[in-house]
Amino acid sequence: MELNYARLDPELAAALAALPPNFGRIDRGNLDKVRQVMAGQRALAPTATNVVTERLLVPGPDGEVPVILYRRSSAAPQAVLLWIHGGGYILGTAEDDRARVIAESMDCVVMSVDYRLAPEHPFPAGPEDCHAVLTWMLANAEALNLDHGRIAIGGASAGGGMAAGVALMNRDRVGPQLLMQLLLYPMIDNLHATPSGRYANHPVWNQQTSFNAWEMYLAGTPGLDASPYAAVSRANDLSGLPPTYICVGSEDLFRDEDIDYARRLLDADVPCELAVFPGLYHGGDIFVPDARISQRLTASVLSALAFGLGVEVL
Image (tube, rainbow, N blue to C red; front, side, top):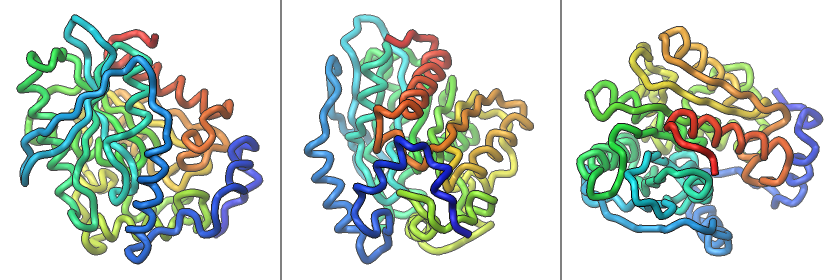
């Protein structure tokens, strides 16, 4: 099935013409090259102002886990968001501009995790790294000037999927109480067995690339047998999870799996806010941050996080 590009938001659609041919086609053969290109783009990316950056090494399950702590200067213990970057479980770093923007936009510390990536380190390496950082963060809250009673977890795309998996893992291991999970178009269904998942030509992150990424992350194709900590769509019990915010675009491969997850959370008596943005393709808000629909998404995300942590958007 083919997605009708006429449904894309015009401001976001215009950006697609500038992308190189075969953009978004990622597999094991070209992964290293894609990583090199992304590293070059990060070097040129602007950084948010008024944010102090601190790099730390946290004890992990198989060695130290690098993290980047973003915060505005504050004397009082601050609420904290454990942030997990996106990249299909195979790309990206803790140097995530959205983490900087969140830290700049409210009185909240953002701790971004440089978890191990697949295929070199398939599941469960990434979630175990993130859970170790969450546990360490709570144990060291006083030294870090964090409010241990106001902790959220979140991420975008695969980072949102991993955040959801870590929240589930944290529930089962009776870890620190989370005030909320903030999931931006999370990648949560390794089967994409939904109406939106049937389309092969989604822009930026298409069906085949997504299946390739899942294969690398899961070190194979376990299908319905995939761990719910890797693909939370496979989870049977969603009770006891923290209040949740989910957003996704109407033209995103992940649209229906995210909508279904929100419905299942509500069925499990987990408070859940769901926002579906018309005409938005996957990551469109990052490609065209000044587009009106992108600004609406950003405002929605910041508002939800501020409400969940009990802080104000600055």
